[in-house]
Length: 386
Figure 1 (tube, rainbow, N blue to C red):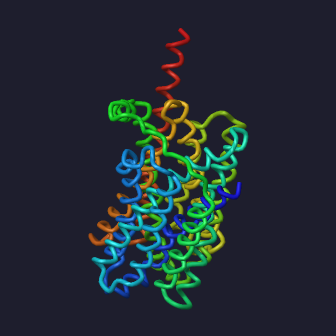
Figure 2: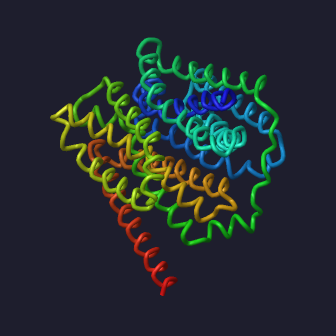
Figure 3: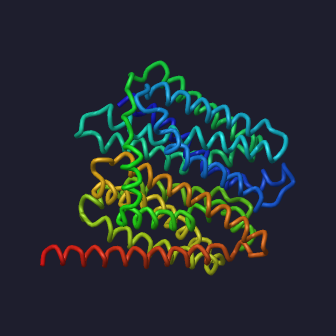
């Protein structure tokens, strides 16, 4: 499991980088003399490139050494984070964030493939759990740490720390990781057929809507806290979200195995998440409840992906890696779209305090969509039985 831990360090850096910018947004906006809505687009370009990197580069890396690809991905990711700290204008900052997203998007799905290839089938779930858990740990531990670092030496210092962690993982993989070859991805015809499959499309569509509402909203968490309650010290709230993410990431798997009802779990998670979002602006006079709701937001948001992936693998067992990558792309693409829509809404005059309500309404639509999927599947089963 030593090599899996190296992958986990890499995904920790990815999770750290993907979510810490939201907390640093006010400082970044001040540095470049821009609005929060403009600064939020740095999250948009990162998540957009993260989402698109895997499918774009999948064919190019087929048959190549996974170790070399992972090293290159982490090198791009780390150098881009260093560049993000060095640039002197916002346009160059956006380019650097885009490059960091490309490196992250190339590393993440390959890390999952490598983790499952390094261990026996009996330990595969644990290996994948460790690798994917690195993302949530990067949020739970890395993001608050990054905010503390930013308070002491500025937001650029946080990005340098992320770059160093990425380089550490890169060096470890370069010298200690075994040679594995990336599998040949499905053909273009198979990919089109997979995307055209209405069941796959429905599940991925729910992922996309949920990510617009959840990840997109997280981009503006600092602005929301400041707007509603004048809260400037957001670290405790980010801790609550991140710890909730760790709880959700590591608890949902056993729950899926125990119930055998991933679709029902998805519906439940969406219902709770919608209620949490809609309730947020109304409970800021009660600090304890703010922490509880943000904690629940983290739990539901991070737990949501596992049952979605489980259902997709059941539908496309012959192309499990490709269909999970498709869902991952939808997740981060949704986050990019959500960040962009949030920025446009703020620019148009919508108050930050109204963003959670808008997100909650979108999540309720996703919940209704999930119910329709379940009803449709039940009808299909009855027809088959009949």
